[in-house]
Image 1 (cartoon, protein in one colour):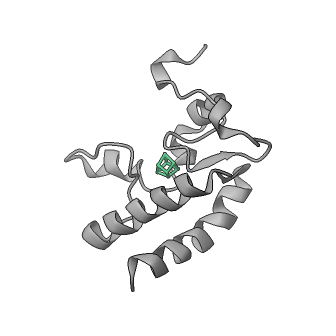
Image 2 (cartoon, rainbow, N blue to C red):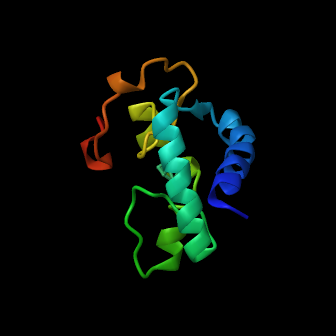
Amino acid sequence: MSIQARKTALRFLFEPVIDKLGYKFTPAKEDADFLLEQEAIIEAETGIPYCPCQARTRDRAENMRMVCPCIPFHRAHYDAMRRCWCGLFVHKDVTDPDKLRQFPEAKMKK
Ligand code: SF4
């Protein structure tokens, strides 16, 4: 399968999953397209659509927390940002993703 075809397939597969989690694809179409392409390339290399924005380690269990969509593993953090770490997914009510702030989990307000 070509990278382009896999991008389309990933979008189709992710849509119902993130919908149930209260998220949608970012309305920034170029960003979404780029991130999906990176995931399709990573998947072609590793067999798994790992996150294009998080560094993998040698720890498989840890890496499995970075398989897209990783929202359930980082729910409190992403809900606080109203986007996932890469920004591929945003809360359903977000119309301007440029206004969202990305911050590390350690900086979350307790
Ligand atoms: S941060 Fe976003 S793009 Fe990256 S794996 Fe998680 S849900 Fe997917």
